[in-house]
Every structure is written in structure tokens, then in C-alpha cells.
Amino acid sequence: MEKTPQQRFSEMSAAEQKNAIYGFKVIAIVIIIFIWWIWPNSDKPVTKKTPPPVEEQKRFAGIIAQNIIKDNLKSPTSAQFPFATTETYQVGKNLWEVNGKVDAQNGFGATIRNNWYVILQARANCNDYASPNCWSVNTGPLITDK
Image (cartoon, rainbow, N blue to C red; front, side, top):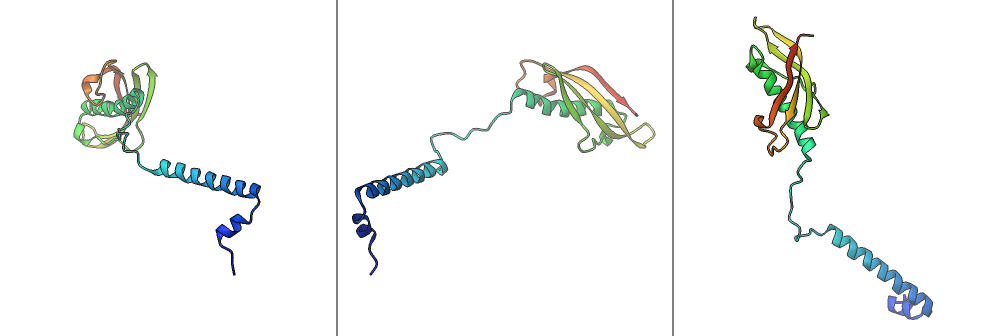
């Protein structure tokens, strides 16, 4: 007949019993910590992480620059900015150089690809970089066919 856990425990020496109890305590603590870690914490409100101003400026500088380029084309409605051709670089505090390629119709109706760039200045105390009012053109826009 097999012994029960209680019988096996009572047959251990005092040192073995102490080690077994210590092992059970460690396992219990690990389980409690794991449950605490995975359990949702209702005390903390879920907040949307806001991007740092530099990242937000970079993202919107590209969008604003493309709109400025569109406004300077002969056929703005035909403008297509090829995927992954717009690049944005910070060249100073709140100062961004944006360049890329645009496919648009010329005065004869032919679609051609042009290179372009513009340097934009973000207004220092602006809270909404998506707004064109937060930006001013520092240099450009320049649109070239080379």
C-alpha cells in the first residue's frame, strides 16, 4: 500500500521537513507574484500614450509638406506621392526638411515624376501639429524634374 503525503512528511527528519516547508513557501510566493502580475489592475486608468513632440512633429511635417507641394502643382488633384519616397529630417529645433517624389500631370496632361523638398518651421507653442497654422515655410517649396 502506498503512503499518503502526510505519512511521508511525518517520516522525514526535522531538517527535511524544514526544507520541504521552505520549498512550498517559495512555490506559493512565485504563484502569488505571477497571479498579481497577470491580473488586470483596475486602479490604474488606461491612458493613451502620447508621442513625444519631436515624433509628432516629424509625422505631421511630412503630411503638411505634401499638401504644400500639391498646392504648387499645375494639377493638384492628380498628385500621387509614391509609397515610401517621402523622407523627413530634423535639421534644427522645430525645423524639418521634407523631400520626396510626386507623380502629377504637367500642363500638357502627361503624368511625370518630380523630386521636391521643403523646409518647414513648427511653431514653438503649438498643440496641434496636424493644423497648417502650426507650420510656416522656411525654404521652398522646390519641385524639380530631375
